[in-house]
Structure formats: C-alpha cells, structure tokens
Length: 98
Image (tube, rainbow, N blue to C red; front, side, top):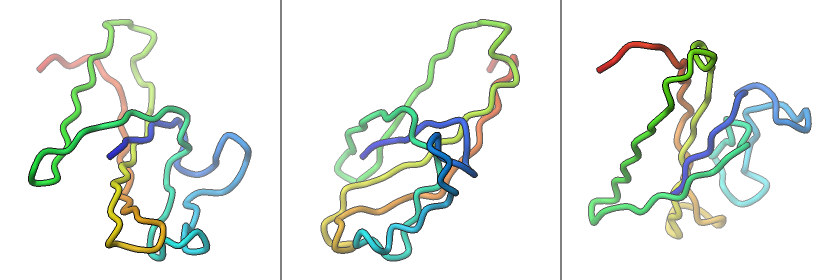
C-alpha cells in the first residue's frame, strides 16, 4: 500500500485537473484525487490494514498548512490495473497537543 501526499486536490503540479479518472488505465471507478508530490510506502497486516504515524516538528510557521492524502492498495483482483484507491482526506496542521 502507499499514501500520496500533496498540497492540492484540485490541480496537479503540471496543471491537470483533479480528480483524474483512471478508467483508461484499466481502473474503472478509481480516481487520483491528490497531487502526489510525495509518496510513503506502507506494509499491511494480515487483515489488510496499514498504520501510519505522522510526527511533525513544533515549527510555528507550519501552523495552518493544508495537506491532502490519498491511499492506494495493490489488489490484482480489483481491476486490470490491479489497484484500489481510497478517497482523499484534508489535513490542516494546528497547534493542539493530544
């Protein structure tokens, strides 16, 4: 599995509109919803779950930064491209401690 990180869910860095339909690539009903500027590979457990912890520095200038994330899973049974895509999620960095 992998997670894409990006700053936009409306345009890629090359200016292409998002979401991008992956039907022509062999993945009907799958959409790239995030400009994938960075990718983090993840291992799944026996149930197919992946866990990710984000540790961010306490830098005041990061407050308010918006990131978008989307997951992709290798699934040869799902479609001809062999993937399944998640929806995207929006993260806004704040300064609340948990």
